Amino acid sequence: MCSQKGRKINSMKKMQRMLAMLAAILFMWGGSAGCSQMKLQEYLQQDRQSKQVCERQNQQEAQVLKPQKEAVVPPKRISLEKYAYQQLNPAEQTVYDEMLSAILSQEERVQLSTTDTDVMQHAYKAVCSDYGGLFWVEGYVFTSYTKGEELVSLEFSPKYTMTKKERRQLQHQIDGIVEAWLAGISINDTDYEKAKYVYELLALNTEYVENAINSQNIVSVFIGQQTVCQGYACAVQYLLGQLGVQSVIVSGTARGEPHAWNLICLEGEYYYMDATWGNNEYRNKEGQETSFTDYNYMAMTTVEMQMGHQPDFEIDLPECTAVLNNYYIKEGNYIEEWDMDVIGAKLCEAWENQQVVTLRFSDNSLKDQAFQYFIQEGHIADYCSDITQINYIEDSLWKEISFCFNQN
Image (cartoon, rainbow, N blue to C red; front, side, top):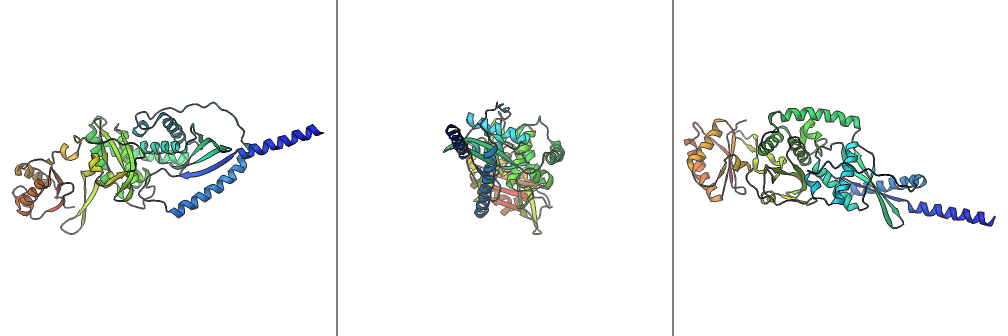
């Protein structure tokens, strides 16, 4: 009797220790960098709710979980050419692969090969930066398992916003729209032509609307045609990917507000693109706002990007110094020396085609000279027949003058 009682007591103590060893803490993390921030009170309320869910979950898991080893099949490495993936160390790349595989398969949860939450967060950020087309997922939750004071396992659970069926239906719609939108460009065109096409495409077809539905993903762009900066950046990455151009989503701030834009690779050299700011406006002679495409943000250097943007450096970024694929240089609208007839010919062409033409000058003194000659002294009439009035925008920061001949 004594020995049996001792075994029962020992058994109960073992069970108590096993129950004490199983603990899970559930957190929430939203990975998309949008144009608005969550209020602190809302975040705190969500955190409390998460912990309550965790406590209920622990009570169930403590009864059924048993230590066991399962054969783990490494996920396929399909992102070797992706920019953010290349910036990760091997351990982070493995976690990236595990997360991406789970998201693409729409798995409910997956055990990660790391117990470091910083590695997990960094890897997820890289996935979101490399893949702008993951419209069916919005952040993730994770469960951490501890043994005493030791963290022994992390379980990653993507937060899906739709079912697999809904995802397939939306993807079918998006595929049809993207095919139509890209009908005017070829995979065989130059990287510059592809980037310019996508930049203009988004400026012409998408409206910036703060409260747009699905504004943090490409659904808002291709189906709603109303989005915010995150939607623009995701669409740039997605469309350029269809055309074989490497790009990645960059998060940070612009003019003090959360913002997203892109790093793109054209002919082997890196540039920054901000399609959100590609659509500009001015008031025409009737006082109405008229839109035009602003090419300042199509292929920026690091110095130009930093004039209005501040990256968060969640991913390592290169120093962009190339200018060969700068719009103004590529299109011959970069003025380095005074020649009234060369400038006049460009104005004449834009006038005849009723277009906006922006001339960028190598220095402000050259810009001021052009402004005085063509606008203040009225010599624009020597090149643009029958012109009686002109709308123009002078920009000393970019050293530019935009001549707005479009009347619509």
